[in-house]
Image (cartoon, rainbow, N blue to C red; front, side, top):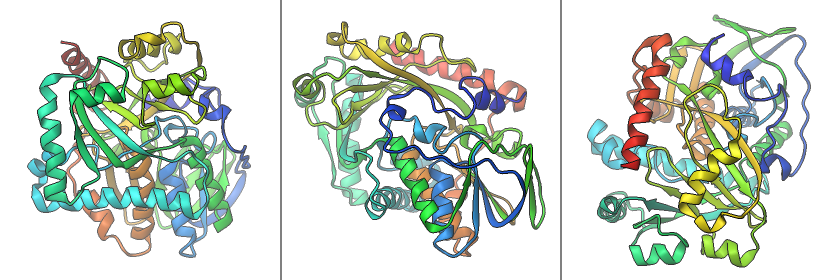
Length: 437
């Protein structure tokens, strides 16, 4: 069994959402049939997360007949399990982008990232998706040596990228904003936001249905025969499609080796405390913004609508989730907030995301009628949603924005299929040790 198949089936009950806070507070239960028999469509989308549903929605609005095939449930993967942070920019910061591709292309990538953020907010508004959207992400420096760069970076975004919604936060202010000694400064981005990720993806699915998209759950694609049309084979069904969109992120391995060579699945974990009460919650995060820190293995946290602390953190280097996720994530949470020592943890869950070597998403035209966008590397709420629109544009003959993303260099992980995993683990261990020391 390939690496991605292990992630698709090893850690969760088939066709069942994980026991997360998000699942417990979902607005509605959407149920879609399993695909059986033969069918045909203009576009077949593999994966019912942000990228897949966004592509389906935008294609249906252009008049295409679209079918979405999901191996488990709508939003079952990273789209329904993540930290809910709607961040600005690309996953790689502008300094590094300028070094790699120059100022002009770095500006193009910034503008696309801003369009991604706007699209996500506009979809929420247009389709009346109730997903607890709130403004603000605080980027917190866990080392004093990082603070001067944060100040310079905020100034750079204002001067060179006309982005004035981010500002520097010094040591005194961050102590007032977060009741912890873990951070020395950072930046506050009021143009960024945070949301309930599962309710957002369920809202996208409902919008797709209203637009005429056919969605099938528990419908895992096992094999694809390339051609025009392409033939997608399932256990008890097959689909002929003029176009195919791969929106599988970390679960694609056996379907498309070229993507699998560039997109690596890894696990991450989140816990949710008991409701803390308004006073306690406000003391932890005064302004109800989301927080992401400067560690290579990021700690990220925010308050839920009912005043729980949702805290993501910790790293593991095996295919399996830890036996005790609560204890696993509670440790980094207490390093930030030791005052929560006696606080009950009500929910704990894991999830799999797709990362690339440079942490930028991998866009590719795999053949004249097959497109991929994946590897969002923990920055997918906006970019995966936007990727769906770009793939829809490309199929509809307007590929210029898709091309900007595709032309960014995305190398394969070294080591090939058998060595890429242990080599990636060694690299992450190195950076996690660097964080500590």
